Image (cartoon, rainbow, N blue to C red):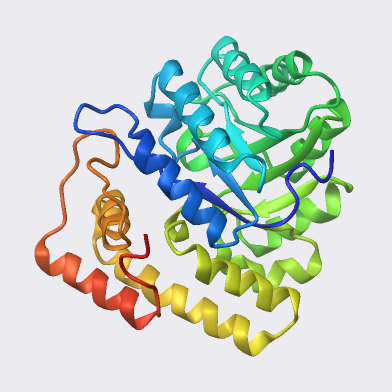
Length: 306
């Protein structure tokens, strides 16, 4: 179970859509193949960046099938199955399992942010029971969108109650709390940071990797950072982190058009993304796109990489 997700850079794959809002499977599988060739250590599919909560059940199933078929087990693909209700979550989790996903991730049930602790645990318990006691279940803590923060002590209690919980993505959590998770929840439970910028301080102390949506289109640079940390080559690690930070500063400059910026970056990298996100959003100006292009070139990111 502990090897189902491994460690390192699990990139949250963006889900591209066509003009009708349907999953563009051709571009999606092209992006998945690019990630594999970029030597990422795994993919995290259909979370927030992957637009899972904005998609229909059928669309989520088709996207999962397409990526798993393309990757063919070369790297782990964690499928996020979380929904606002337990029944849909179980349906998606069982589908992912049947398609050969090595692990399923589940966020706390969203929209109703006043769920009690009992209700949250029962939600996870139902998914774990449906999948079976040996199938790896991955917690996805994302209080920014669910309004619920699990916290280290609660995760420890859930892990004691549900042995199939094998790891978690801790989004919007800083260094201190990440290390508290590592200390409180015993191995083989694996903690992944929601940001690559925590790796230098936490990976040497037990955090197993990062799942960071804003850097998902720079897989080679994320892998470079992770490998430098693993070798304890701090000069190279800081240099890679600095290049990523410079790109993030430009992304922050577009304000609330960050998803449109992700689509623009995907196009600059050579992917024919027609729509991202799934809903209508304000596009970037030609000047903003030009600024992004210069930032990528300065960071050594290859344009038209596919």
